Image (cartoon, rainbow over all chains, first blue to last red; front, top):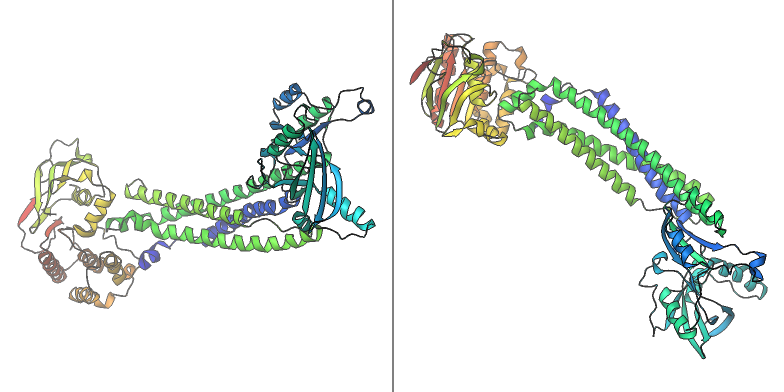
Length: 400
Length: 214
């Protein structure tokens, strides 16, 4: 092997290999950096709410003065309207909000001491729209407690309005999830209690959300005769930035909260931008691969006779190809290691900047970028190895 | 491998020739293991082509070349590699040494593949052929006659059933020619191998079992 390498390293062009090395390093770094930056920054938009994804929109009908005094439609969605919405090209899935049709009141406290009580209501959306482990988001008759997702604003109203004026302690999300909620349901001649367990707080949902199975069960038990149409709709779209959505919403007099669309739009544009940058990185990688292949072709060309002699004295094509294959794999591995190192350095730089803007941000996982880097390394090395072996086979077959 | 048979073989370039008078082309000839053959030829009669066909370097011929009943056209890459490593050794007319390596390295590059000979044995051959002082010299600085001797040593550091020597002594004086013939015959007998020597005039003085005119 030592002697074969001594023979075949002749005519290796260092400038060409250096050109490949740095171009590949740059390409790889851009690819990895774009993915890592996307992973990190998307947390800013997504981590805020783990329950409802940003490509879900919540629609309701505009409340006007006429509808308030009962002169216009009651603001509910008819089946026909839901069907029409589902048939739109931008709609992936449509689900209706179902509201409780009976009286609900709730008191909460710690250690059995009730601190806070209120009249309230429940709503549900189809379970598929709720981004919670379905093992936790479930209710069946006979269960002691029902899982609940509360709007984040409730906590803010309590902490910054109520608690402050009443000299009560502030409650964090963690403590709120440990609190006992006692729910009283009245209707159909019954008045019963059930415990509530706060599963989390959502900033995207302005409602008190319970599992669909609970609403179905409780409506049948406490308000068996009530039939109502939904007045809110949850909609999954493929592209939140699609103008057709806004157009459709306006045409039909629906409403959706702008900021919710914005988060979706931001992530969408972020994804597009990251995609473009990644494509540029891949293009650079591809060009660097081309440089390397040209360099290897020239090298093989110049060393053809030596390789032919090695084959004629009993070396297998596999062994003759090995030195160049190891050379390229070694370079690719060095590129991978350096690119990951540079990625980590760049990441610590921009994360420091981001932390000043979003102090709570914890960043995304580095694993996807590492896996992508590894996949690129394997793909490029494999392609190199195959091409080199192909050239040697040509020499074997006397076509060179 | 016990035999190499050429069955009606003819280089493609001779296909239009009608006046082929040869002991090998268009005939059935078998080289047997353990025997020594001299193939005498004039220039341009396809002597090097014959060697290239047998070693599998070229396939531009008509007819068949058969190794122990197996048609050489059926061999795949692995078969040919195994054949060149341990069944047929070849001393090329153009030597095919690596000029940038030393004489010893040229032998080592083959021996490291076959692990067939000890360095001491190789050294003895260098001494017997009178080029011991050139062992560490780059081959490009050696005369063609000296290079021929290095090429012979390289051809011997592998197991073989047949040794093809294409004009092995064209640039050697009688004394060196005899020394080369001696180590070649000794090694071939030790291995029980067959030898095919080609020549266009000057040839090794060894007891040939058969002389063929190409």
